[in-house]
Amino acid sequence: MTSSTTETLNAPGAFVATGRRVIEMEAGGLSALAASLDGAFTRAVELILAAKGRVIVSGMGKSGHVGCKITATLASTGTPAQFVHPAEASHGDLGMVTPADVVLVLSNSGETPELSDIVAHTRRFGIPLIGVASRAESTLLRQSDVAIVLPQAPEACATGIVPTTSTTMTLALGDALAVALMEHRRFTPEDFRAFHPGGKLGARLARVRDLMHGAATLPLVPDTTPMPEALLVISRAGFGVVGVTDAQGRLRGIVTDGDLRRHMDGLLARTAGEVMTADPQTIAPDALAAEALGLMNGRKITCLFVLDPDGDGRPAGILHIHDCLRAGVA
Image 1 (cartoon, rainbow, N blue to C red):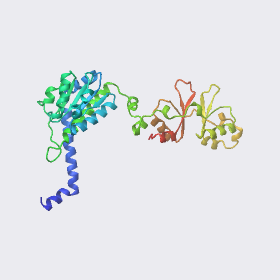
Image 2: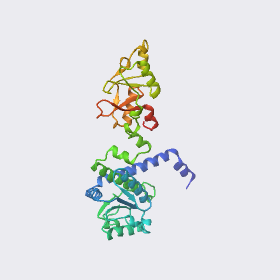
Image 3: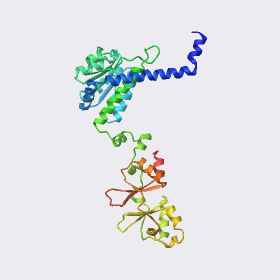
Image 4: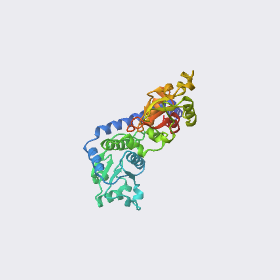
């Protein structure tokens, strides 16, 4: 290779051109995959829905890495799944695969020798097998109950041998299966949160009831309470507000810093009912904490009283903006 050729290949513009070429080639593969989906995809979804056990995913090399991601996506969206490495399967892990399961095996060539034992195990015990490969005549697809053929698309590397386009198509196919299954099962954000209690996703999907302060800590006074007493409640509770209730315990209003400033003249001679802001913004306990944070930011307030829909207007809790921020809600 000459020095001028090396300089051309190492030019910054060449790197970008390579990146764009790779992405465009893989996008072409995805378009071909979308167009190729047919009844085999439908049968695969139906086979998984009919299984009483788990989806056992297996693959070797890059297909195995893709299979691990597909397994995680299935499990987190309501379809119990487990990855079984084909080499480990040949040394005892076949015992993880039961007749109640359905097996999803990934192999671009369909001839990966390490897969032979797990394929044979499914045939011996009548375990449903979904095969994914790029050659319809391959051993894997000929043995499968449902054969999904990946379209012929060039790999994105210059040599045409490094798994790139093929693994991208396989990964997208796994996503398509997972989404089809979750939509059929009407998988909700609340279901999703059950499998994602931690991290940013868990915070975004947290409910108000998960973060609010309960009834024992509520800063509440009757509307007839003299303001000196109401001020003591504000100070003790530490929320910077006090809720004002009627004779039946229903929330009538709220006293904030702004109300105190507006009624500074003769404040201590007034009652909480005279100083309060009536009909304050409230939220239900089952609302998303992200919604509560949006309300507080939009109205430039720091607290929301939580009213249980079945409580006839009685406060069930209070949520401070700091509770949302500490939990990572944003």
